[in-house]
Figure 1 (cartoon, rainbow, N blue to C red):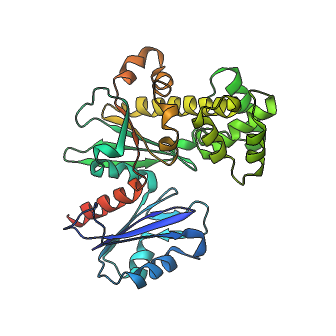
Figure 2: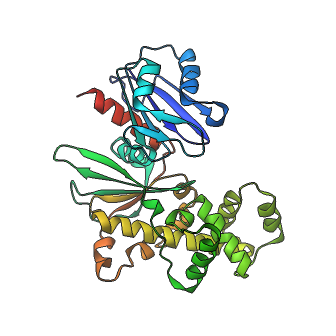
Figure 3: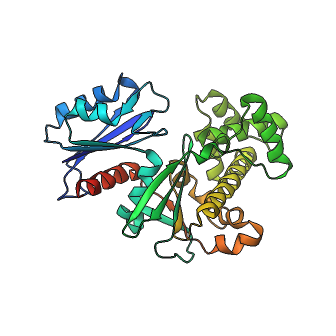
Amino acid sequence: MLIAGDIGGTKTVLAIYSPQKGVKSPLVEKTFPSGDYVSFEALVRDFLAEADLPLSHGCFGVAGPVVGGRVKVMNLPWIMEEGALRQALGLESVRIINDVEAVAYSLSALASEDLVSLNRGERVEHGPIAVVAPGTGLGIGFLLWDGARYRAHASEGGHCDFAPAGDLESGLHRSLREKFGHVSWERVCSGMGIAHIYEYLRETGVGRDSAAHVEAIDAAADMTPVVVEAAVSHTSADDRCGRAMEIFVSTLARKAGNVALMIMATGGVYLGGGLPPRILPRLEGGRFMRPFADKGRTSEILGRMPVQVIMNPAAALLGAARHGLDAMEF
């Protein structure tokens, strides 16, 4: 049997699967607050104390760059290493993959109801597939056909240099450069990015807020959910929140278009992560596709690419399980 997990700085979801039942039917599944544990091994031991099943393999999708089977989990003091986990858990094999890589592997397990199309496009069989996942950070991954199946690949493309478009974004770029030095796409196209955009608009007097939302934003430990809710609600008093979301969607679409061009994603572009499902009304009706395909001479190519939003919040867990079960078959 396989133990699979989606490991993040806030929460960790673990589940046990058998090859016979597949990824849609975990035998056991439980969510843990990651910060309550000193190490991943300690968390797994708690899980296995309740789920006493014979395990042979493990596969974990982790928020952080995985190099040589080792990763420092984002926003946690955890160090995860495949060899150390294999020994500590008594397993035959352990695989650690990036969480966006796990989302990429989930695509073959997702049903039609797990996806919302922003552009039907013309999918090319076995064409490269791009995954762009804005959440707490900005994850970038892709899948390439190897002649027999798709192989997922992670990247740290969210940390590439941000390229502003227009005077307002240029001002935002200067403001962020003064605060952080290097300005990546993740500084703008993520949960933290929404907060950065809103703060810049407020500092420069762009748009207006209702008194109620000013109070809610100032009182919030994390303003992003407040800004998102106000922007999606389409209330007329929240112009600044709506303007912040317009900039976020435009920059996210341009970045996704860049990724799609870099790998020629004729197999499709998928938006994962926690933000796209929450802001779906702000992505539809051409709001995402217009800046996505606005690439001059290559606009027609991008306009033919299928673009879909992943609505299933368990995609990373599904992908880790799918990759782990596939590896057990070799």
